[in-house]
Length: 536
Image (tube, rainbow, N blue to C red):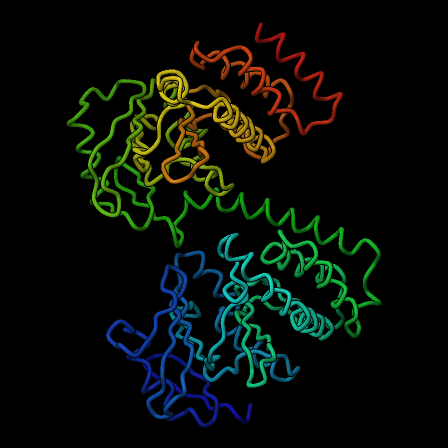
């Protein structure tokens, strides 16, 4: 600790690296608290959890620091801070240990905390800025499939230094716990050699001896981040990783299989977590509570706008006792108009809402769950529930207005039957194939509708040559459950009965063929037989 100096400033206790005591925190604190007022500062992230700033140092021309200021959110964070170190302190300690292990990471420059009666009120970490460095995700161009193809060579060039750096990390007893492409930076030196730098180390744990379990969990997270669509790159990565010192002796023959199993578990857990976030205060969602009204809404929407929209709905449809209706109303930016699904509840429904989700809340959760699973649905914007003496008496779900979409039945009539003889036969076959594969994808992702009809499906082909199918009216959906043939047959039967009469029997059978064509032969035959028996 000889190279660190203790300081007190503005009620915060600081540890500052020697050489920076005249700069930190006195000359940068005003900028940290109000970065918007300093044009030279670059605000990289500002949300409910933390503010990240890239700040130049006027005392050292050309030099810059990276500042993380963490924000306590609620009483749970206050309680946790009494027993656990802050994220800033954890990252400061881990970065200092990385220095001793000579693992490439930013050098910590200062750390500060403000506590009142042991409760953390503010914390800040200042580290050196890594110039001309980009995250691994950005460097490899993994934001879109098109960018990924054009950047395949970049990923191949990174595999060897990345595998060796992570092997060395694990051989040193480091269990990262958050190892993904966003927490790994890469930069090229003057010779063009790629250098790997590890950041966001607040969750790191240091083990006396590396274990296969910790390695598997770290690599599973990295696999989900970078390699899910590149099996050859993953095989090359593992081959180089196994050559690392103190690594090969720990690994068993089924090492790769274990990684893929854990990676699949992590993906499913991540999807479940994203589904539940719409009911919490997070970086994307907010909650407003009043005496008789509770609001769940996205952060780009204000509570005042929602209250005004609710008043508009009440003026448009004053009869709030109707069980269900849908209408479109104007809204403020960034949404010019929204679709409102209003629910009215009987006394039985109100009593059920004391124990279970009301239909409106189920719609809100399921819509966000579909988006988390990359299933198209109109963007859910907000949920408003009005409380009564017994449970919820009414609810409204605001979604983005699907003006560019058409109901499935109307689309089929207008495109294939009312448009004249110019429609090619191959276009009809392609539509049936895409539609069947869209429904099959739902079941592959363990998504089952309680009631699936043509009214629940929208078709959009405004921007693509192939149609995109969106799903709405989402009160009855099961996620992550084993889907038996009986449920699929029920959905397909309901869908078949709701399609326009103009759809011929041959086209309906063609849909069934595309739906089951990837199944094993015996299973396919039995399913088709049961489905046809039910339809007839």
